[in-house]
Amino acid sequence: MEKQDIKSLPLSVLEQELGKMGLARFRAGQVYRWLHQKRVSTFAEMTDLSAALRGQLDEKYYINAIQVKKKLVSRLDGTVKYLYELQDGNCVEAVLMHYHHGNSLCISSQVGCRMGCKFCASTLAGYVRDLTPSEMLDEVYTAQRDSGSRVDGVVLMGIGEPLDNFDNVMDFLEILSSPQGLNLSLRHVSLSTCGLVERIYELAQRRLQLTLSISLHAPNDEIRSQSMPINRKYDMESLLAACRDYFAVTGRRISFEYALISGVNDSPACARQLAERLRGMGAHVNLIPVNEVRETGYRRGSRAQIQAFQRLLGQLGVNATIRRELGADISAACGQLRRQEAAAPKDN
Ligand code: SAH
Image (spheres, rainbow, N blue to C red):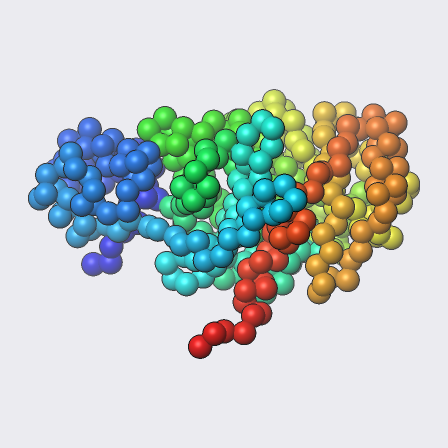
């Protein structure tokens, strides 16, 4: 029988599973704390369990681990970019950023991505597979262990579309925030999506405390459909309707990501259209000077143009900030390191 991934199981599921093995409920709590608080890598280290029980667990389960394959530290601001190698040899990225309010880790949710956004490096080579809950947890645990500093917040904004890996992401969030795990409040978690409308309705029903970010990047369907294929499936009106529902159900304001691309979506007319569509939603817009990925051909405008766009949105009643760029010297934007690694000649 193939061994099961024990670190991916929420506590309630682990209780059921170990219950089926005839174990008392408190045993599940013990094992869970070894996995998610003490973060051991072998059953042998679970010293308050009998040798027989450790042997039983070892027969049925394995404990996932990931390796730091490459690590780049920004000389500008100390941002750390990790390239992690998963057990099957696939690689994903995470970025640890230091803010005055704490350390935030941007993690990946899939190996590759199938959404096909034209400006994004993560999707260029397509989709390989979903990450398991344990792999997402290990992105966090490994960054903490390697850096020696606590991860205070997590953003699901690395490689992949988190709502395209819905169940695993939900289990990951449950374990991440559980008091017997890392106990990280979902108030310190952001989830970014390109707009899988049905999943946004489903997420609203979970009433989580996290911040939902929508990668909007355009003020109308014509521009959005050119760079984001998902918009041909769910147009902006259906996306914004889902966002209004999310806000009504959860009471949590939505943040809209808008990467400014020179000559594509950065005109004053675009700002006016955007403000018109977002009015009354309590929305916050995060303006991002587009990261120039060689293959995409997209270029960023000048600082002055970006500021003018922000000012205009403000005058029209939409709160907007310009994202501060961290790790500019280590290609910290998502997907870039994994691509470089894949393209690099192999040593052997
Ligand atoms: N799939 C999710 C999360 C991953 S991408 C999503 O689409 O939201 C994280 C964010 O980076 C998204 O807002 C994405 O649109 C943005 N992004 C991707 N490539 C970019 C680029 N070249 N420049 C600026 N932002 C980019």
